[in-house]
Length: 324
Image (cartoon, rainbow, N blue to C red; front, side):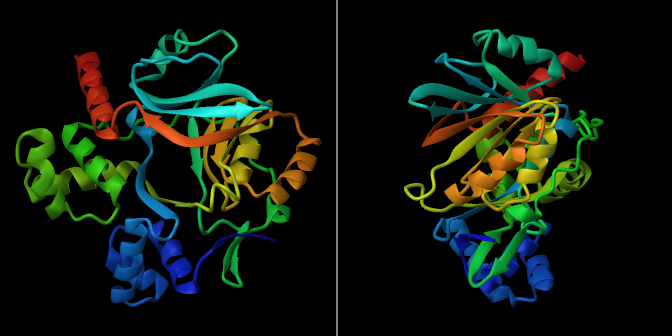
């Protein structure tokens, strides 16, 4: 086992409950921790004092929206539907990572036209996130620890775009925007903020209907990320290509230091803060599999294209026009 993130047992019990909970009361019940303690710990997480982030996550693909990530040598100043931009380095060479949300898979070619032919692109046909309930993650001696020896590459099924279960409109975007910033904000608080974002007040009853009938159909749990000192463990991005790339990416998200995986048919991108001692067993295991790997170090600064609220609003307008 490799110690990764230091926290007390109460915080760990709360984190395990946060992932599948919609309210503080639900967290209290699942963790067997009193509500006042849960509220205090969540307040510390929200303020950023614990090195933990959590956000309400939806399955964009089930709403017909495609996540895409491209690694390119080319600096592109303006891109449609850009979500974030980062600088990567490998062997002293500089690359750029662009992520976007596209209104449909049909726009992939348009997205790719912005980059050189040899750029590396992964569609998020499937996205995986680390879960505190992962069998390869344990809490012991005051640390969240990863167990690389318990990670097995087994799910070799190719990713597939899921059936569209709900389309989102501007009220759903408002709900997601507020919930992505803090999963436990109440609908009444969002109602008070609605005029600021939509130019009109949305009642609690209307928000509640949209939340139950749209957003909960897309809910993918509350995503949790653990961060350690970047000076000690740099943020990395692994690009995997080959028949076993999807299975490897799924397996690695069982470890607490890997945060997010974008998975395509024969390629994947996974990011996080893997400790140095975890990399040797990883690369040894790769020798037996059909995969090629590029290991990038990611610079900590990030430039977002547009706030996720504005981005999703532009996407919903595009979808409305397409539907007409």
